[in-house]
Length: 180
Ligand SMILES: [Ca+2]
Ligand SMILES: [Ca+2]
Ligand SMILES: [Ca+2]
Image 1 (cartoon, rainbow, N blue to C red):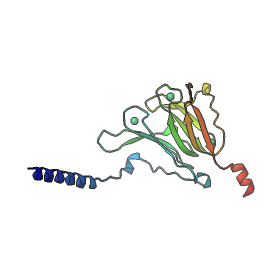
Image 2 (image 1 turned 60 degrees about the vertical axis):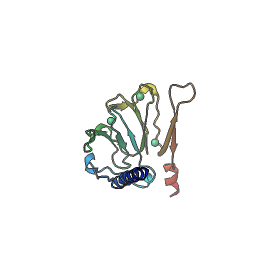
Image 3 (image 1 turned 45 degrees about the vertical axis):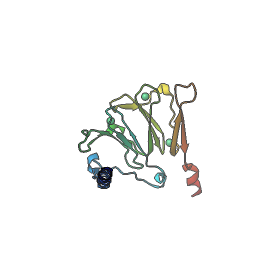
Image 4 (image 1 turned 120 degrees about the vertical axis):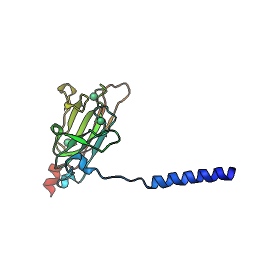
């Protein structure tokens, strides 16, 4: 009896492993509707970030993809659960010279905001839910600078309601061009 039980369990395990080995992914690249490319000159050799987050609280991941010298885009996930992938592009949020993006609730209103790193002025977008964004309000006092920004982090320091944002800038292009 024990032998039969062990045999049955082993068979079930092997069947499970076989099923897992057959797991496959189907390319649905056409679902995004455009060819999203991170491209550009030497100032885009570093970068290419994608921010994956849920900007409309429907539990389906949306993403904001950097484009370097091309267009960055927000792709809102319009797929049916368990169905084929489908995305809607929010054209108004397309920017150039974007190196990366990070979702973060800067004003703690439960709507994710978006920090966008650029070769040029960095951008902060305030989220309003429903994947609606607008430039950060002036009272946030965000100064985007004009440097070549390639890294970012943020932290809520002890007792602080607003996060501290830290941007990492790469080569000083003005100095670099003088020495080339
Ligand atoms: Ca979503
Ligand atoms: Ca927010
Ligand atoms: Ca910058």
